[in-house]
View 1 (cartoon, rainbow, N blue to C red):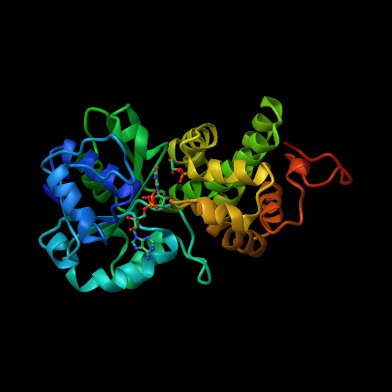
View 2: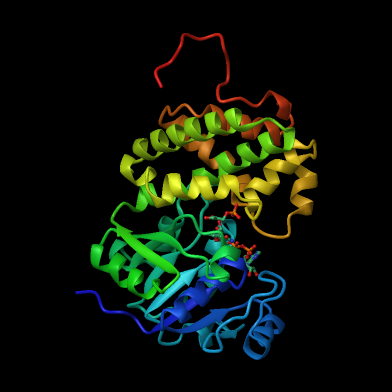
Length: 336
Ligand SMILES: NC(=O)C1=CN([C@@H]2O[C@H](COP(=O)(O)OP(=O)(O)OC[C@H]3O[C@@H](n4cnc5c(N)ncnc54)[C@H](O)[C@@H]3O)[C@@H](O)[C@H]2O)C=CC1
Ligand SMILES: O=C(CO)COP(=O)(O)O
């Protein structure tokens, strides 16, 4: 039987780490949040604000922040990690000796590590030397600012071990945030990674000024790409029709709060990749995941025309106005 954990730690005080800390605290847990900058920890503890990332949001007084990993991690039953994917390994190296050996570690991230092509749960297992029953991932239509405003939403917690997923879900549930569970870690993580890339594509369409048919076609074909890729790597197709797939795809593609959608819109308006990276103050994971995703797709023969076109817009070889739900009109009509 899963038991609701009471002592939890969150690593990363950006928009998602801070918001998730509020979700956990509002669910009754005692939460310690690691902020890299002592001045941010001070602002959270004294003003109950994180004004850079969550302007206008009051944080629960029960949420405490600290810039010292040891102080944050002491006695933690659950450790949630919300740092940019490409920095996970280095952050875990720094945190590893302070993470209690029996803690469950939960990835809140939606990226693939460049170079190794590993999912975040794989990096966690490798760096901490723990097995699947101590690892979980959280995903779903979870735009941070909406949740910080307590607008109702749902998420899914996945772990190889159902009791682990249920234990995490108990902690990550409150009156405005409901966590469901599954045991498809691969499908859940891949959904979160790939919806970011489709959201960049939809942003490009928005930036160019095309309409709803183009967006609906790319969304629908994008979901087919996401599902084909996930299945090729052992994920379950139904996971991609759920919160971590379709649900997150809709939220991220439709919202101007999305950093991936925003990055795409700037590209569609004619800004270069370099300009977009310089403009973005927060993490847009789709931009860093695209190369590893295409490499993984090629390795298993998965056709990903939408992801490929996003990569071509990023490297300046495709005019954003030429983006379409297909690559070429030359080949024979394909099955849907
Ligand atoms: N913001 C959102 O709405 C959601 C974000 N996520 C995922 O959560 C992860 C974190 O995203 P956000 O919190 O939004 O990002 P963010 O850019 O708002 O914050 C990142 C945090 O990581 C910290 N950090 C630690 N080491 C770092 C380093 N070496 N370089 C840069 N920053 C470092 C930063 O100080 C900052 O507090 C991403 O994988 C994202 O896809 C998932 C669901 C929702
Ligand atoms: O993952 C998210 C919503 O579920 C956040 O999307 P962005 O990273 O594009 O802001």
